Image (tube, rainbow, N blue to C red):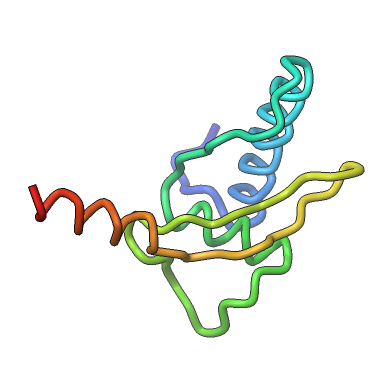
Length: 96
């Protein structure tokens, strides 16, 4: 291990390995959905490496949600950087 930070490819590879382990565990438990919470920059780098269309973006919106599906050994980015869930939660919190 060096005292240098990971490069983009290392981050994407580590993130990908983690997601594949999560998928394998979910499949073994007969689960069809999982929620993964991660640092926004790591998520953004991984999403971009898997076909996300976010030109000129350097970050995801704080507390946003992205949906990724996994089928036949491949990940597919369905949608990303959605803040609807966060916004609904804020409205509910402030209305109480």
